[in-house]
Image 1 (cartoon, rainbow, N blue to C red):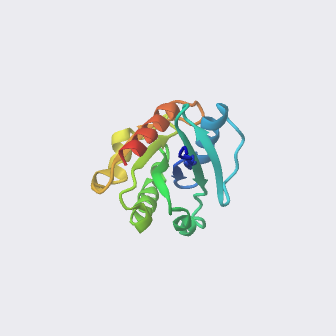
Image 2: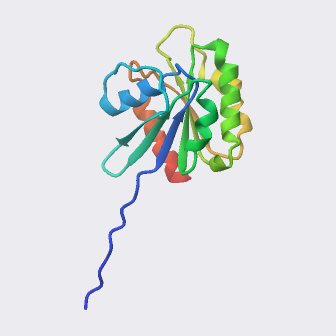
Length: 176
């Protein structure tokens, strides 16, 4: 009698996109999903979608609202997170300190222990943006020695750097 093999359906890994409000999280996600800019409004709660990177790799991407009133609720989305994508408006010098504090707080949650981090310095199409080195320094990324992390520049509006960023996220998933 032959053995019956059961197919196990593997759920796509869960990736969270977080950052302050107006950093471009929803624009980034929808640009990557649909290849075009979609009209977005401030996210109240979350948006979720499955992003197919290639024939073998898909991700469940959660875009979590970043308003200061939403941030206390971020902790409820962390369980099962495989990669955290933190989006920063690289043109917003006034709020980079606020972004650093939000990132530090969320990375100290037990559910994110050892979870890889991808920082996306968004809005690089605008003039006078911070360099990758500046963003990295202002977010204190060098202090996160307990996890793999990367930082990349991108422009959600222009679509620049997004494909590379998500391929890097897939690599972070493989290493984790």
